[in-house]
Length: 148
Image (cartoon, rainbow, N blue to C red):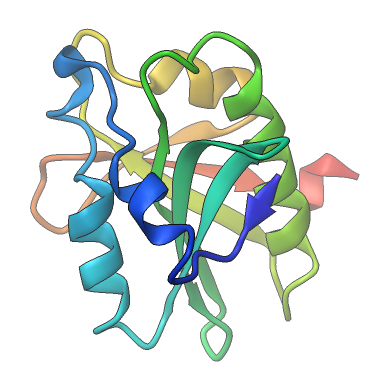
């Protein structure tokens, strides 16, 4: 389901967009991939169902700290509500769980109507009560130790 993005697949990933009402919650894939190339901690993949690209994920992986974050996560319009997001997030959780000294996977979301909060809660992420450095996004975490 998660695949590396290469020269041949880049165009199809760049064309993926969320619904208009969701654009305030996640940067475009073009912006995300550009940021990834200038971050030593970025790890990104296309999300596929069979041969069809349906989404994008980018993680922040710092094995030295260790700190693991879902930096970007999107399922494209037309592919939402089909279980692809849940399937991909489960794969992401299993991937991160195997990284050195991984205890938790964190993410943040913009608290607003239509936010991905219900989806993240359904996937097992819990609100921490903390906000990001800018005070605009609430932080959630998935605790691997309580997932035994």
